[in-house]
Image 1: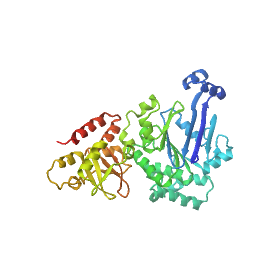
Image 2 (image 1 turned 180 degrees about the horizontal axis):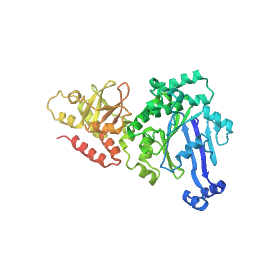
Image 3 (image 1 turned 135 degrees about the vertical axis):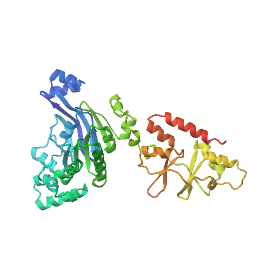
Image 4 (image 1 turned 60 degrees about the vertical axis):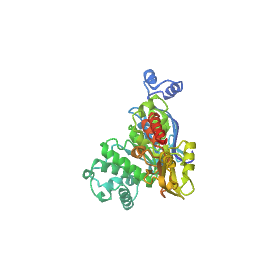
Length: 412
């Protein structure tokens, strides 16, 4: 992949003696448990291969003992791989000399841990500038850089405060700022929010997403929390027993789990937080307000199996009409009935990034939900039945609502 900032190819980590013999057993299909019983060696990571794209948050997720922390420490050379290749900017850190490894850590990659270990008698600015100090950056320059990143994480007013003056969430922001201060393209984040209480943790997750919109760092984020993984990850790698069992987007993993292990993980996930209007939308079929008769609109709905259509006045959305209303108007003896007479102007509108959980109320109207862009142009529609189908995880709700809509669409 040309835009990959980090590439891992067939990486293994064996803890114990006679690693070549253990690798041979692995390639023969022996399990981690069988190898431990037979040789006493522990398989930390087994045949991991993936690429991290520039500017994405790549989440590695797994339970304790799955190998995720071992993997992230291999990525910056804290733990050397037993076999395989780890490329950062084209350099293989598995083969790098100590001097080259120090340069890569200084220039290309930074690590942020769960326990941020701030120096208690140093100010926030001094804590943030610590890595720069180690790298020989002059005092004035590193202080200026520290203030810049403290501003980014909203802590500039506390630059001269001590860590004891801050809450746990604010201290974690200092840890994040220290990682940002180095200016590395790649950030490794090992359970950075794991020690925070749920409310502060959620705040930090949103803080990271907001910062990422501006910074566009390449981030490898380690977590054991699937909800956190689904919220943060552009793509997610799920690990078990040292192996990566699936890599995909949140939507791909929830809708098409690779095996029973992944399926069990995602069984109770709130699908409304995973999917957006864009995931369930479809191209709209529209009619023009001044160019379409009631009879033509009814014929289009009958041919397309639609119970409602959006009506355009040029490029502007004028409203929506339903089959039920138009069919009733056809029976009206008044010769002046037009689309304008049946137009519903109070219709649900969202943007493509709106989560399905936020669409539930709009779906209750029974009308197709208009998906509009920043210029309020209609770009797609979401059927209420599709919202309920995705929220429930099956087609039962969708079928029930579709039957209800079909019944309502028939003239009375």
